Image (tube, rainbow, N blue to C red):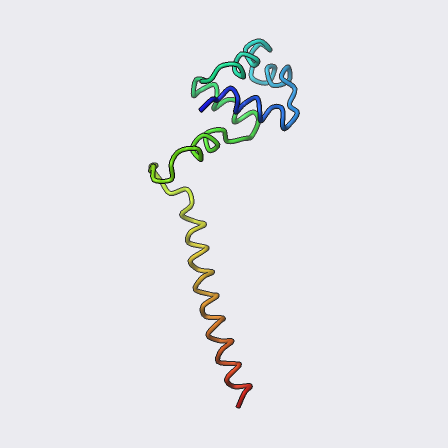
Length: 106
């Protein structure tokens, strides 16, 4: 995992001006450019960059971990509940459709 490359890719992709980012962060332009060159970054600094750019670099990093790794909470719990509810609704609609098809045939 190379956080510098991750930052550089995002900054280039979104065409973010490094000088503007440095001003908002209260850092020098050299510091911002150094973040891109290093393969690691302090968590606090990455957090500040996330807040300023409104991008979750931590999630980008987390998604690169193996699927079997756990975390303190299930970030997909709400979506999983919605999926389960929709699957149940689909099943009910299929049953309703079959019943209507039988009624039409009679």
